[in-house]
Length: 430
Image (cartoon, rainbow, N blue to C red; front, side):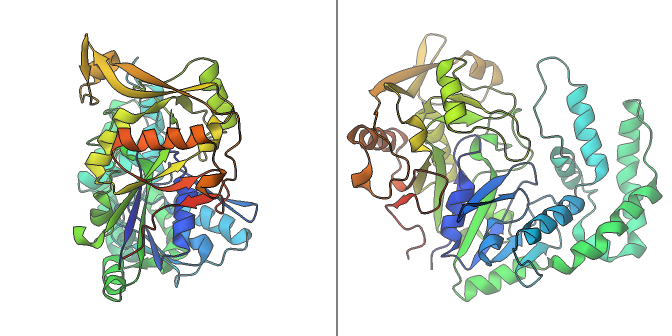
């Protein structure tokens, strides 16, 4: 039985929410394996929009949903997001939602530190975080001082763990000229939310192993795109976790053999939020056209996304790093009406042509895109549900992308509605 990991193959915002929702109807279990509540998924079902940032998309379909150990969990945000979904009529109980007992928690001190760093960043090194504490929470995880979900179930030992955590954070705050954090205040903050989140805690590695052995179909979903990966993204303008497909195993407590198919979500053009390099960015009317037509604003922050032409070099690189078997190409309809469309097929760096994106930030800043220009189409692709509904030039554009990135299109999305999808290859097929 095939298990599928869905991974964004650009800088995120590729439309993973719709694709995960489309696939989750056929899945038995949906697992979030990395990130926090710093990236959002929008699901549109029967005209109703559901905005998720921490909770797995499968909940809206009533599927067993798991927040894995690779996710950092803000307990207060969890309670709030849970309440919003319930208010929309989604039934959520511990029978359908489990959180890994060893998931690290995001605390108010993490949010404060995140914001202070962004506000005090030296010129040119601002990362552009969502200020939601994700980075500092991952730092504490790696530093072996995290407060984890399971710690809330042991209040008698919690204060000693808080003291260890604050030994680091209060020293840091003193150096920044900030007031120290009171241990009792942090303890009270955690106890206020403990009763609301602890019923959802579980040994999710065991649950997932049992479901795998029972041949359940498991769908793994990440948050940010692969180009924000802490190792393989545009470092340091990245997120604080690994976002590539391989993290699905580590972030859920399953072996690498549990993932059988990697589906890369790829937008028909390119966007990114926040700071960092963006070779094909269009600071002109084309960029404005893409942003307005594509409604390119962040689900979580409302920030306007930067827009540019499709970058085949970056996508090809992420396909290799993630081991992507096929892609879901989204937002093709945004390109409707353009007279011509450009695709980046290579770079020029200091007079030399290269076919990869360099790791050095200094070299990244000097790359210049090499474009191919294709004719556009005036007909609409919006709502197309089969290849025959697409204009000939749109089909040529898609086929050329397949050639350039070295991966086939498994799915094609032509609107936010889940039904407006052309299925070529079913990722769940054995």
